[in-house]
Amino acid sequence: MVYLQIFLAFFFPGILGYGGGPSSIPLVEHEVVDNYGWMTTGEFSEVLALGNALPGPIATKMAGFIGYEVAGIPGAIVALLATVGPSLVLMLILLNILYRYRNSPRVKRLSSFVLPAIAILLADMTFDFFNTSYEAIGLIVTVVLMVAAYFALEKFKVHPAFVIMAGLVVGGFFL
Amino acid sequence: MVEQTQEEMDWQLVTKKIAVPFEEREFVAKHRAIFIAFFRSGILGFGGGPSTIPLVKKEVVDIFKMMNDEEFSDVLSIGNTLPGPIATKMAGYIGYRVGGWLGLVNALIATVLPTVVMMIVLLVSLNEVKDFDFVKGMTNGVVPIVAVMLGVLTWEFLVKSKKSLGWKIGTIILLASFLAMIIFGLHPGIVIAVLLVLALSLPIKKEEANK
View 1 (cartoon, chains in turn red, yellow):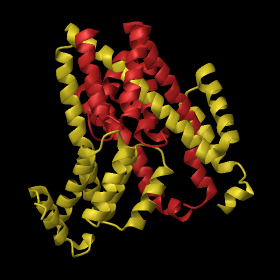
View 2 (view 1 turned 135 degrees about the vertical axis):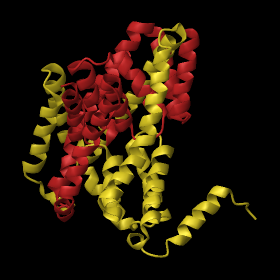
View 3 (view 1 turned 45 degrees about the vertical axis):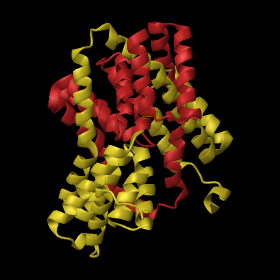
């Protein structure tokens, strides 16, 4: 039963997330936090942070770990298959058809029509994380850390893995 | 003269062997190459699947010559019209094309497994010490950073929406999905499915068709 839940929790984000793994993250959060309640927003953000600090595709790292947390190694395997399988099968089956219509405006429009909806989901998740942080460490500290992280990431182009490590160290000592 | 590192010499050794077309190479060499190509691009790429794509291209096109530039671009653009993680779609399809079903499994394992194992080991060992104040603080320190990363990603998606849809259609879809998902709490899947149906069924404007 739990395996079916894990499968469904990762099947939908895998089949609905346009724009690669990162855009499926809010969909995963929706299932894992809101729908099945396997994790809190705080726990989810911790997993996401460490996932971002490690190399490789983010969707499979999240799926593998959350599956493992919920139901051990079989859970991890089910979550990975649900994430990777459906979209890959579609690709293998539809490649020839899509190849023929790859210049059709309608097919090109498929991924762009979904972009604004993904943007809303990402904004909602940003707000969730802001709120979690606000409740845990207060408004001022949250804003200071966010501004510092923004400058480090976007202005000084510090590697995300280092910014996350710095956050872990600062948090460990002061928060 | 620039001194060559061991790694560079290994690369040259590997590239020299590929005078024969990739598909005709012997079994072991072929599958070793598939594994190395996707293992390296998975373990060296930070920022999720989409940011590993240039690395995959380097391995697949430049180093191992599994396909040429144009074929790779075709596979990538078709991959982008489908949902789901892009890194595994690319790995699975390219692996299948150059190495059959075994190639598919090989490429997928090389892309996914090393980083998933790293992730599980790291987080499980972190969980062991979860109740120490230091580790609790670490979580608190990292949440605002993730919020910033998500905020930046949100912005990128807004810019991409504007670029590919224009202000008018972009804003309409944005407002409609906000109302549907956030205000009325509709499942995101329903909203995305409706958008896909609209993308395929709405009439195409003339200037779009000419593009």
